[in-house]
Amino acid sequence: MTYVEREIRHLFGKAVHSYGLIDDGDRIAVAVSGGKDSVALLYLLKERLKYIPISYELRAIYIDLGFDPLMPEKIKDLLERLEVPHDIILTDYGIRAHSPENREHPCFLCARLRRMTLFKRAWETGFPKIAFGHNQDDFIETFFMNICYSGQTSAIVPKQEFFKGKITVIRPMALIPSKRISRFVETLGLPHLENPCPSAGKSSRIHIRRLLQELYKVNDKIRGNVYRAMSHVNLEYLPPPLEDGKGDRKK
Ligand SMILES: Nc1ncnc2c1ncn2[C@@H]1O[C@H](COP(=O)(O)OP(=O)(O)OP(=O)(O)O)[C@@H](O)[C@H]1O
Image (cartoon, rainbow, N blue to C red):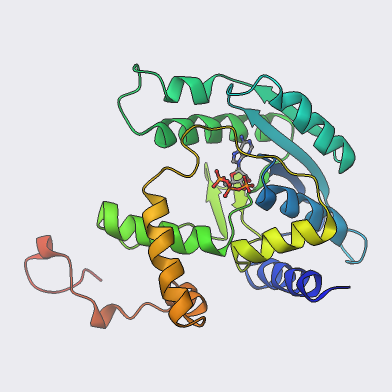
């Protein structure tokens, strides 16, 4: 086994255990876009079943966004090669998000519609736990995006409940940097597809990504430190909200 394979399996297992992501008997819908992250996620979730004492059921869900008519067939082929039962849902969300009818950023509308459809299908098919392929860089970039563009300290989380616990979202790739996933996918020769979205690689996230890459070049500990900083918050050394009026943080 290569170093990257060992490393990825270790980080994946660490996230699953530390954040309590998977229970015996879970029925997990895996949100698969066909990109490297979600393909690696599906592969790792399936592979783990062979050597862990608990069991769970997997079902992949792909939401086609209407950009490329060949995509659904390509995804079907990919999911058949990975031997995972799947649902392919055809929509025009990507096209609608890029049409003049939409006044907001295409990514906002598209992501919202995609998520709603994913939740609905997962719930209807009896797979109330949904796994997403967000990697460690996605966590960090979202953290900086929210600070820079929304003025709030928040990010995405490894485990989150919706609708009073009816749906649980998990992100088992939380501790794995994007580049390591690419290396893993290439080493194992896992099938994956390019994202056909015209906005892919054009969002304001790219500026943040470039900035962070520069920082990581200076010191490779920065990535891990930023990730840790998201769960080590010292509120006493952060200014209270201005609207509070008393200079105190509400208890
Ligand atoms: N069209 C889709 N259908 C189903 N799930 C999706 C789709 N697009 C994205 N997802 C899910 O949302 C996660 C984050 O989406 P994002 O657009 O940030 O993809 P990404 O970082 O390029 O990941 P990937 O390499 O898996 O495409 C994906 O890893 C996947 O789990």
